[in-house]
Amino acid sequence: MIEHRKGISIAVLLIVAPPLVTLIATAHQMIGTGGDGLIRARAVTASAPPATQAPATAPAASGAPGATPGATSGTAPGTAPAPTAAAAPPKPPAPVPGRSALDFSASRPAWETFLRDADPAAGKQLAANGKPAAGVQACVACHGQAGITPSGGIFPNLAGLSSEYLAKQLADFRSGARVQPLMNTVARALSEQEIGQVAAYYGTLAGPPMHVGEFGGDAARKLDVQGDGARALPACANCHGLRGMGEGPLIPRLAGQSREYFTDQMNAFRSGSRQNDDVGVMRAFSQRLTDAEIQALAAYYAGPAPQQR
Image (cartoon, rainbow, N blue to C red):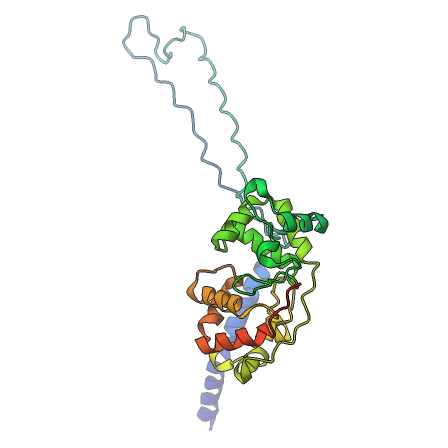
């Protein structure tokens, strides 16, 4: 009986001992490195180059006539050697470029400055007249007098889009992040201030009343409202608003865009020729849609043909 109890005690000890030792070791490590020493933010600096020592003066050659042992070259016998020049103090190391660990400010895109103090009235004049000296035609020639493209086609309706979204797209056209030859030329001919003015103007125009969702059938309606979890497709309404009426300043309104424009942009995302979507979201989603589904969604969001104004 005694041996049985002894065996049980040894078994319990073997079970309890490893976690107990680990707990003690962890507590010792935490106490030994306590405080915020491991997480305190420090300025990252480039390591200073090692200090260089001046080369030692060569001793005078022994055996030379009149040379005194221990005297250096050029030094009279009995006189102390001239002191060497003190080495220049090392320069403080330059900080490594980048944000410090204490900088928690949000990173702001450059196009936001385009909209600062932007005058919509000046943007309206620019949209109506263009910039002939720089070869920029009036915006209304393609996008309509009130931001509604009269003939549809591959030109987008600008009315109903936010000024933030429009400023970002024009900035992307200007930088080449979004490629469309005509718009690349136009955006590069505009100054940052003019981009802000045009975006501010079109951002004031409300989109026309639309009765979207009447076309495209159940397939488009399901993708808009429910998505397709099996293909990792969230509902379109999660980002673009129900029936594409818009949701958030950087998410475009889809309601009222022509079937041709919607299809053209989805195919551009699909092929990778348009790459200015946030973290590649639209490129990924468009590749999971069939051609028939893209056509159905185009009809769903287009609604009735826009009336010329």
